[in-house]
Length: 373
Image 1 (cartoon, rainbow, N blue to C red):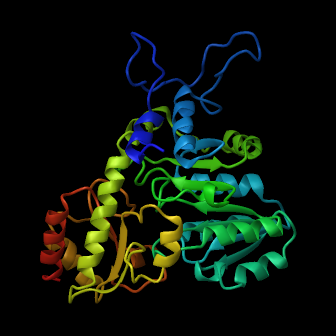
Image 2: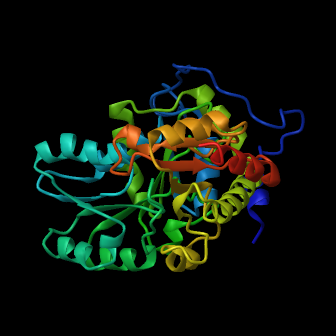
């Protein structure tokens, strides 16, 4: 099988047509010219776009999916799936320790429709809690797992969870944002649907919002297409082109990000200013045994704790390479104090997203900045 950088380049390669551009440009159109009814590939940009098809083909190839669909953001990917595939009186499981706005959406938008929402941590996916929830649910439950979890970096055993969901007649969705398809492939591990934010490592330049869904069975596509069309949660043509262009270097960028994250985690756990370092790639991390069994790379995120909010601000102010910013997966190393956004973490909890700087320079900068906080 080709390496990931080769796969990324091949995924975005244009069809060989002599005289055509080597790489396709954005298709900036809202309406398209109509022909005889039913003969057009494109009619209106909320329904389709040639750029979508190119990007979706590339994403499906990287995820090992039957099909992929792009939407306007990672949150849109989650909500399109939930709206398209749940029904009143049904059951939905969402991560209790994952992205907090998913829980807020489930509480505020699904529960009023008569949908029973359960919130489970990554640990509870494997300790019998998920089995108990599914035993009491009707067939057709929807289970959303986020692994590694954001921001705690705990890991869900996807093979075991997929087998449990299949036995209960439930659909398993996996948020693959942190790992990306270059780090793990949930569909190959038994998941039914991948949802992800392409805003992060796949596009990688912190300049666009994009989400996508990838499915193991293309029988799920019509429901997702219909929800995308009716809700209007679509990706603009320029962002589509930017994301497609960026995929070509995703393998190179992600390799460096993961190497920097492992090096940073190894250094941070020895630093006197730091406590509670988590990174699934560390051999002694609690998540490592499961992560090593299902992940090929462990992602760009490292978490750790400083003594409090002021220490965080001193750390960022003293750094020459680390910028305080939310989101993650860009070429620049960033730090986010997650308590600011409402995550149930200590005030000094830091989510560090490692960029593509030279590893030695990044480690020197982190050490120097932490020594001043």
